[in-house]
Amino acid sequence: MVRKTRRKRNATFYDIAKKINPGYKGFLTPSMNQNLLERVQEHIKHQKYNPGDILFIGSTHPTRQYYGLVLVMDTEKYSTVWFDTIWDAVFTNNILTSLKQKGVKYGPMLEAMDPYTLQLFRGDDVIEKLKSHGIY
Image (cartoon, rainbow, N blue to C red):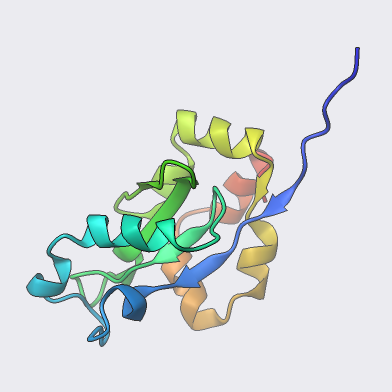
């Protein structure tokens, strides 16, 4: 029996807030927020994102920009997951299983981030949780 080796793929972070909303200046206005998910999905159709990549699209909350993160799940169906915090999405059982099956790792992405951007990914014991689930 030949066993398939799962390839490791490091997730990538993309700031697409100004691509989706050229007038973006720190938070989404109500007009920018209209049809946002459709515009994000349309953008994904024309890019080379991978499952597990994280997109920053902005938030309507000026002090809660971490609400503006989207997790790319399926690049053929252009599906995304959007939770209040990105780790709520990642640690959901079916999503976590899918990310593990795809060999997605978040450690290199987080280690390469500048401190300001890293604040978007705040959370209690996130690094430890990622490591314990084998996706760091």
